[in-house]
Amino acid sequence: MGRSGNSGSLGTGSDARRLKQRLESLAAAGVTDLPRSKVKTVATQAHHRDPVPVPLAADRTPRSPLTHDELQRRSGVLAVLSQEVATCRRCEELACGRTQTVFGAGPVDARICFLGEAPGADEDASGQPFVGRAGELLTKIIESCTLTRNQVYILNVLKCRPPQNRPPLPAEVANCRGYFHKQLEIVDPDYICCLGTTAAQALLESTETIGKLRKRWFTHNKAQVICTYHPSYLLRNPSAKRDVWEDMKMLMSQLGVQLP
Image (cartoon, rainbow, N blue to C red; front, side, top):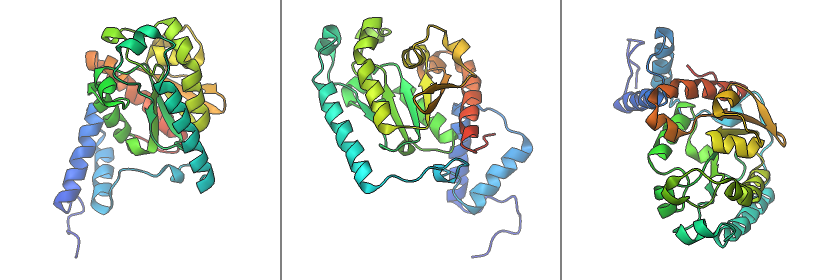
């Protein structure tokens, strides 16, 4: 079929829907306006191909794919660790109050990990990380970065929900430290994005606030670490979405993906 003679046309209805979804994700992530040239670029991409996701293998620092045996090995080790977490009672208050533990989700060879604070009520009920309102916002942020949740590994510092979603206690973080460290060791990401103060301080063993940890690069083993606000903070403070978007631009720039 021939293309429209108008180069600004979006073509099919499905193309228009993709563009609408893309712009809605950008808006949810805090991008409320785009330069005119950038809008044209997005529209042109929607006309010729689906712009989401951009494969990470196309970035400027690709790594060799893992063998089938290595993928199976990592999956097996994670499964054993997950069972250990499921029976953990190091924090008696949390163990008595939980419905189930929330281990983590994503590919075992993910290049990017998102590390949050602790499960909430929705996560405690489902056993999956970031599925409530904050999880929906995190998904929109990930999609705005031209990725999908299926391309990243998501986990929390704590594996059990604290009562009334209170912040984790230092002893609870210490009890779970070995678990999230082991998860990160197994997945072996190139990049870790800490979501919020608890995650950033726990991983980096720092006492600095999230405001001071933002806009800086750190390392954890071989991974580069960036810190930003937790999605639940954005629900209470929507104006901070633009700050998170700037952090995501820093992260994706390392992968050779330029965000608007």
